[in-house]
Image (cartoon, rainbow, N blue to C red; front, side):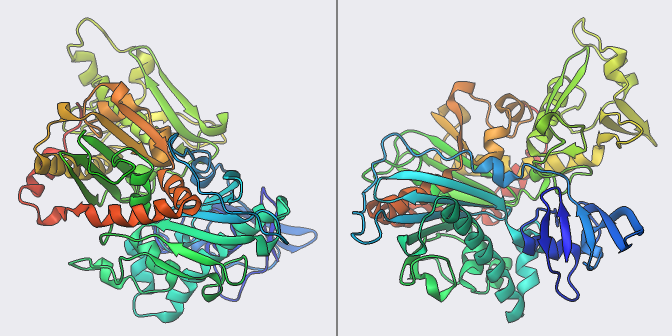
Length: 541
């Protein structure tokens, strides 16, 4: 038996299982960005190996390279995971009306589960379908994360291997059952009272959910095995609930634009309630490992997916991390000082996505990073014409130079804690991710003949969108430079849309109709995309 602290979770490891794999099975969040190859260093944990009652050894190990052994005590950073943050962000549209299900004569009220399956996170919402009320929400990291931070890593893992494909499906089903079972036990909801599921997810997750190989999504032309909505008995895949209950898997419409985006669309006013196409120009962005972008306007809806990579989620950043206790999530830079805020007010141990956007936005806004993405040295800033302003030595000491390359010190550390540094290489990673998103937006704007000034609204979805500071995203050039009041963080739009489909069969039908009317843009095949991508590498408004 091994123990994961601080939550005191007990787990019986299987032979040959690594600590990372054991954590995934036990529902413990450890970052496995590099698919267990041992190169990213994100899965570092403190392990006490108890040899006997008087003999133990504690030191840091890479969870992906360490076999789980009996009597291990594994200390994982106490975290508020992205899942925990994301589960707070469910907002149904004010105009939405649920279609109530009559209570069962013998069982009482009827319940259902809306599930948002992301590459990184999993959110389960239990609804009372007889009253149209949200019972509770459960969020956690997708346990498949132990096998890679992105969908391509997971497709590679299951390629030509039925056993691994089955394992990935079981991890997902097990995590959903864990969330559903936990809520229903706490709320004293009988298993037979749970009579419906709706699941929304990206295309790769849709395939893994049903145990269908997603291999075709990794090679051109990136065609999914299926795109239509599916409805099956929960007993066929082992979900918890009434034995003949059905699970509705919302339909996708392209290789890397899934039903989570369709769900997001119906939770906004991009379309009208009668599914007529939009007149106003509305840009919808869901930024994660993939950046999904939807643009409505001039009677059309376009959608694309762009490979932003894991930089915005911290995985490819030197000291990047998920949204956990001690992650830097806010950065404020003035001519006089550098201020940081961390999740939970804890000592800084790394930087998460919202902190990365904040830091880069502030560095660009203050001229410490130029438009090419280069971090200037302290000497250059002393000599730079700043319109009568000068940086204090307290700010300049944050600039670290070595071999002609400059990094920016966010936190200088102490005798117990390492410094937290944003490196020049990190800025380059952010530029690549930012360019992918910006180029996708620009290509679709040109397709509809729109300029940024024509946009009536920008909706930024997901936990990432809710926690970033809009000014910083605009300052670095990630979002179009339009008036701030036109840009809105809309929370977990996929969870909201899945809930709408659960609560209203009418909206489930409308989601399918919406998906059929969306025009998918394959960016790589678009004339001028590479030029747009290169132009978007610059930072700034």
